Image (cartoon, rainbow over all chains, first blue to last red; front, side):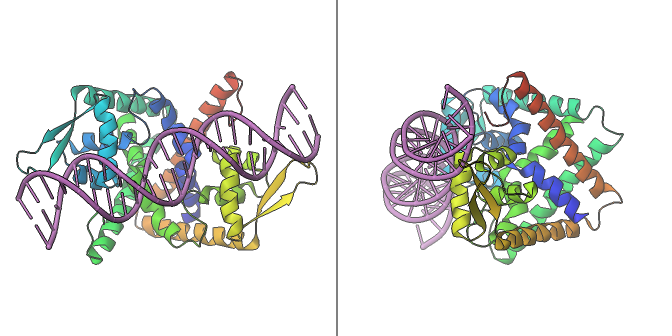
Length: 158
Length: 158
DNA sequence: TATTGTTATACTCTATAACTATA
DNA sequence: TATAGTTATAGAGTATAACAATA
């Protein structure tokens, strides 16, 4: 079974297929949104509240300088806002503008519809099992990483 | 259902989690093998026969110049060989050295074992469903891309 | 004329570390 | 002294287009 999964997972993670799954989506995305800035947008959506570059970086697995650069692009495109943190004058809070939230909602809706169509003729329960399996996979590897990091005395982004 | 899948798939494709799933693996890989050169190695393994840079590029979703550059690295590391194509003097055939094949086999075995452990306590049939769902996802998006490309009169790598 | 692998160009993204401001 | 965001620097990877050799 491990071997079968290794092949299937490898295929999905392969650039060619990853790109295919998202390409149509991001091709239609407005200026400023690409494979690099998308995680920033989607991370902000997931967090749901204005967040610092460091916090957002931890969420999406990059460092604050990268987040800061991508935030520049998104801000220029009118999708992201910066505001001083009233609690800490060192911090800057990143948030989605209404336009940014709209763009994200549209992108996610498109992808969801696309996937819905894709699985429409799958056997009963298979799509649900796929989603469940994917969630478990991510949770498990996240758990493992957290354990290792805390054993090393590290935070999420060393 | 589309929305659920959108979330689960998005999480797996997120750099943070993609990286986690492969990080331990590639960290232990020998010199010359990283996230960029790995697809070349794994593509050659999948094709199973000595292949040109163009053919390999089509397989892994990149162009021949990229393949050529990565092949340089792998060749320097002793994992890949170049040989003249006896059928076509323009072509160069890329193949794995015995060492390269060994490295690939070890990497895939490690990942398979890792996944095997991960899914050991999953409910009956869930891991199989995950693998099946992933395969269908890749096949479907590959099919869609092929249809669109042939409608445009394009080959796999424009 | 078309296609092969390779490579030179310019460009982008990145990691790292420095910088300023605040805690 | 430590931490926030930002930014300058150098380096790596990329796409693109050119190149010489062969079909």
